[in-house]
Amino acid sequence: PSRSILFETAGKQHDWFTTGEIIQVGQAWRLVDLFTEADEPTTPNNPKLNKLLADLSELEKKIFAAPNSDPGKANAALAGLYETRAGLCLQIIPEADAKEKENWYKQLFDSLSGAVLAGSEGSKKQLDAYQKHFAEKMPGANLAAYATYRQLWALYSPKLVAGDAKAQEAYNEQLGQFVTAYPKADDTADALHQLGMSCEFAGGKDKEEEAARWYGAIHKNFPEHHLAEWAKGAERRLRLTGNPLVLSGTLLTGNNAFDINQLKGKIAVVHYWASNSGTAAADFARLKQVLSGQKDVELVCVNLDDKTDKAVSFLKQNGVALQAYHIAQAARDPNGMRGTLANYYGINVLPTVFLVGRDGRVVSAKLQIADLEEA
Image (cartoon, rainbow, N blue to C red; front, side, top):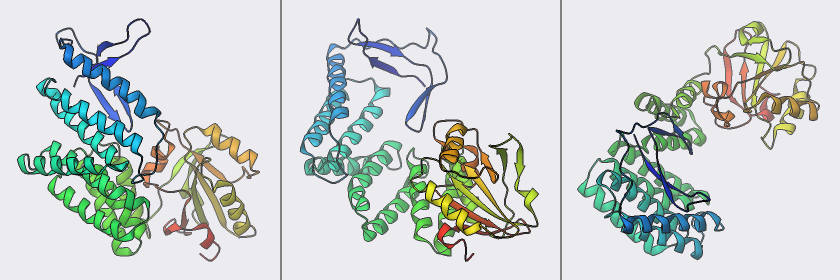
């Protein structure tokens, strides 16, 4: 609802600004309301707290500038900075207003988690102790969930990065317990997303159905979450085979409207792509090779860049014929993978290829370009 933000200016090193309501969208914060004088909280008149906040601000710069390493790899310098940050958070908590204490505990857990990922065993013991304490004293509470989720990530992230299959299974089991214990916590939607992705990439009809259920829980239980529309689309995609494809948009060439239904009577290959994909050029070359000479087969390319000029530039530079159906989206933010066309079928990897029969129904919603000719 409101936050007091400590910031720096050229004329005065530290000053305060009070926001109105702010909402976190991905990694960014959006200001959606202004505050009135009646709502304005008093600037903290606590010299000790102000000094701690100033120290924290300076420390943040060092953390930002420190070289990062892969999760789980020892980085004593970075671990030390995060440990110092945790120590500052512990000093700030008793000085902070009651309504701010939970946020500072979250900062503490984030700091300890960062230290663990940089190789600190001492911070691991501290994080474990805090997780156990809050889980026992505040069962089901959001703060207990926050500590638990950071503990899980700190414990399993290095093993997941290393591709440990058994660790992935154990992590999924822990995530399943987490979403059951904390069905409405701030991190639950993200945990459901991870469960769904893991099941989907595991393959197999049963796993895909399980993934669809996890995705369904996101948009049903967290309808305002930034992943809700994408999750609804991912559930739709996993159950798409045998159903009519819904796809319409604006063509890159001629600015004409396109609807997949106009291709009924022909076979359609629908190719989702973006210019920043490392395989895009090779994918188009392979598509040209496979589809050359095919009768009654149309290629429909769905571009997921955030700006249409990126797509046009890429196609021209790589000699891709613009006579094919090239659809682009009007992205609402710099992440094209969360645009309207990407969200409708919950696209999570590029390229994604659908094969659509002459009747307009999807034959395959998980086709590899290498298998397209045979399909």
